[in-house]
Length: 371
Ligand code: SAM
Image (tube, rainbow, N blue to C red; front, side, top):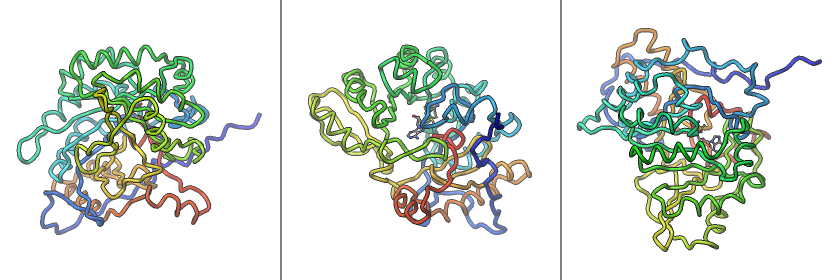
């Protein structure tokens, strides 16, 4: 039998060690990149492991028992994460989202949440601290997360049809347990709650209306995400992308909708509300309506690499600075230089880049960089 080949370049090694400038007049303070975009939102991947194998994210054929996840020593410690988070807050970050992989699989995550919840902005405000989860262990953990200082959660759920959901997560996980997680989160006050549904044409697009019907009239905001070409393993094809405009069209046939203003500049979801007062939904259209020009997000990978775009090919190794004994001022200065040099706008350039190279660029995997 032919030997198994894992068709993955190890993107984890593709990172440069950031330059620490000798002279930096203001290592702290808000930043602006080359396109005038501030740094506001930091997503931190706390583990590259997940207990689901959704084909659009961590397909079983690649992420099987032979796949080598990061060893514990490679991961940023909670102290390292918190130290970096504090420097990012000084540079303007106001929102931190923990993600992964499946963040609730990271041992003692509550301790990290406590540490992050204690951070304050320069004017003394707490951060907007949230987490994205597949909900599989949320029912068990919701209370401890809330008590540690987590404010809210976003739960991913791609279908209500149990058989379809089990197929999509590819580990036979039942819908009922995710719904129980949502209920527990609601009970302990982890809100406002959001549910993310990745829509793949031909796979779960017939679940759009049932999902909307299920969450209408609850305080839970359902958001439809276009299937994205993240990573290099999910076999992405444009034919499987169902444009958000079509989601709105299909929903409008059942429940009249009207657009509403964003909560803040750079919000990823475009918001709509039911005209009859049944609440709101969101659509995230990073394929068909790129929103790079307002993107104020940075991503910190599981092993401490800073990525400036979900579709990046390379990161900046902040862990190297932490473990080389750099001071806070030096690391803050390095982050400042990196952000000021940022010009990424992959989603806007997607079509042109693919035509240029004849193929998609090799990008880092989402479970590692953090969704
Ligand atoms: N395990 C957590 C979860 O399931 O929410 C957090 C990590 S997951 C990578 C974050 C989000 O990214 C999930 O809502 C997931 O559905 C979404 N996602 C992953 N791959 C995607 C893709 N190719 N296109 C669109 N969304 C994707």
